[in-house]
Image (cartoon, rainbow, N blue to C red; front, side, top):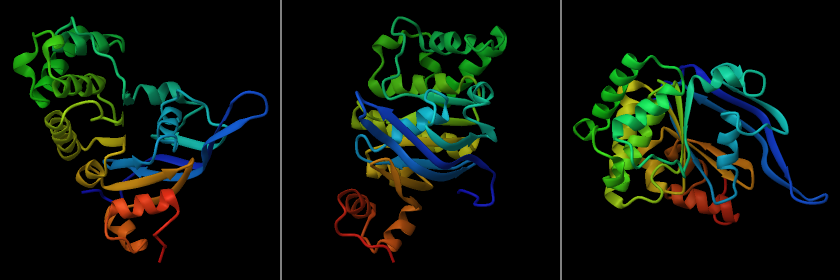
Length: 258
């Protein structure tokens, strides 16, 4: 369970991102977002397409620069100290690629080698991670023959090869079948419980939020409309479930804060 006295590892204050689309046209992707995420927390970002979920993650890992406001990860400023942040966090994008002709072990070793991890240590880490995700017996198999869920497990293991303190997952179960999604969710629960890894994930799946997340932040049109435990949000907005909270906040109908 999340310890509410634990260290804040992500903090944003007034975080804003505006994209310019043609002459004098602006799109506000993030609008004055204030957020805190604590060490060991599984935090879900929920919102419709275009709500700002991916933009927020890209700012936190240094792929985008904020227009205004501040953000820090592990006590480091995302603009001024991004190189230090990148050594301590991992990102698994929705469309992450995998090398089908490499084996499961080779995928991890190749990626870890880009970070300068010593070769002997790298193989030890790769085998340990493949055991964690239940693929050690498949380590010498080319991943082109793997199911969608197995490939996603390899990708999660690959992201963990650098031993990050935080992992960002953008739609981690999108595009894989029901069984594959269950496999990935079970893996994330295991990593959270056993490794105390801080996990931030974006999703459209309310069941995924309910099953995995300590807290959820609902983004809509770039604004953080609500944040808290699912049960807290249901109580606050007098809703029967999180779906009712979410749809009410997005459509502007049917929910009212206490």
